[in-house]
Amino acid sequence: MQTVDQALAGIASRQHGIVARAQVEGLGIAGNTVDRSARTGRLHRVHRAVYAVGHPAITLRGRWLAAVLASGDGAVLSHRSATALWGVWGSGTGEIHVTVPPKTRPQGSIRRHYSMLPQDEATVHEGIPVTSVARAVLDLAGERGQAAAEAALREAEYLRLYGPASVPVLLERHPNHRGTRHVRTCLERLKEDPGGRLRSPLEELFLPFLDAHRIPRPRLNAWLTVDDHRHQVDCLWPEAGLVAELDGWGSHGTRRAFRKDRRRDRRLGAHGFQIVRITEDQVTDEPFDLAADLRSLLEHPAYNRP
Image (cartoon, rainbow, N blue to C red; front, side, top):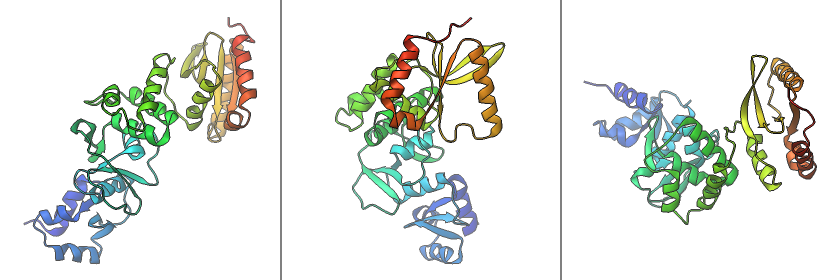
């Protein structure tokens, strides 16, 4: 016969180290036995009636699942927590977002949203009930706006993450959702976009800056080949031979990476490309000067490529 420890371990192994009290009792284990396990350290309370098995150090996915289990039947991970689980936007740290059918009281670090989700807008990913990618992006847009939504749409396309209900279907289904207008604008913009995925917060900030100043969008994270060497650049306007590198504070990471970037700049410059380096404070504190300089470089390229 299976022992209490074996039963707990079996559930936890499939659920990122997390069990719900109802799951344990569903195995025929008495409530007082569950309570005793909590007192003796076999179980560690994460939320009411939700426990970590063996030790309290749980992973981020364990925290996400614990929040879902603590939110009752029909609950799913959603919004920026869902886009983090899918790997299309954000880290998922901090407040956990969960969508639930009935209204319930907030609980600790759980941010609850209330919606009756259609069946094709929710699924299970990595063992965690979660909104579909399309729904997660729609919710993210309502919470964080166009820049975040566009970044998530690009990454979802790059990762080829699709579901039974596409983004356009959800826009028609939810015309009054807070994110619908933002996502619709993003889709229209991306139709004419040169393409590429966003890899940093500064890239996410840079595209709205370009749009606001009516500067053509570049190809993002594009590859160039010179002298049999392939180099990836942050932004490329091929017709003008202009390359922009977006330098966040952590963009180099190591001295070796710094030197590699400068060697690449030298090689590209030798082949007629103009290289400019742009920092976040230039985008936020000097937007008009930066826009004027970029516009001049695009209209009057300084170099002719061989």
